[in-house]
Image (cartoon, rainbow, N blue to C red; front, side):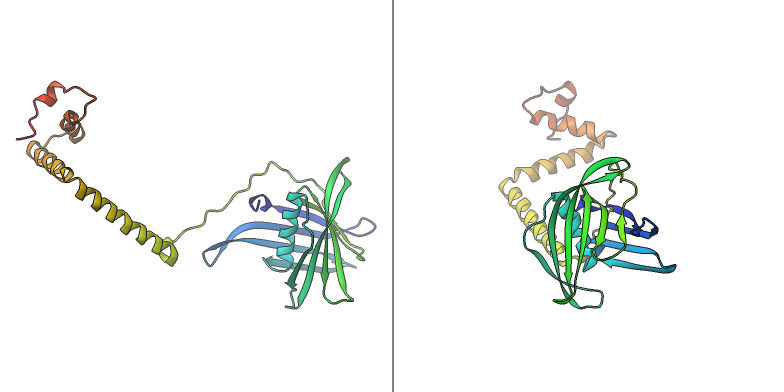
Length: 254
């Protein structure tokens, strides 16, 4: 399911009159931190309010970034579990309470087509008298609108996303020699196999004699085609193939 969350949403900020105020984007990608796989969330908004440039950027997997990823997962499942309340931290390192609720399914029009969208209500409680609430809608995973209650600005999508885009997962280098746990497992497995092989050879001493005889005969004849020579040498040991004339001419006792 996390793999299905790896994509970028591009929306625009609109005023109540429909004026374009700026852009809003959210991207999720796989990353690696301290040799551990993780998810990297990058959210950015930029625009102008009353002709003054403004914008914010959030990168990481805490606070706003984790909330955006959680809502993508809720939208994929089409359901928000009950009592979804988390203790979070804002950008000023203040402890806040984050609550998610399901708004249900509504219908919105995109490019002249009416489509169903899944709504999620997110509430941040900085203090008992200062809650902030957003209504976010997804189709079925991409965010199509985001509105903060009481704000004159709404974030909406203008063009429906293409669902034919392939998600490319970057390859992460694995240095198992530097991982103490993996190296320990490797050494344990190595010793286990060595002991198992040694035990098998002790139970079958004929293996050493067979290989020794073959090597002596090989060095004596020094054939150009080693594979053909080995085939003819070991062919008499099988019960499924009759001996060929060339094999019968070979005397392993020499």
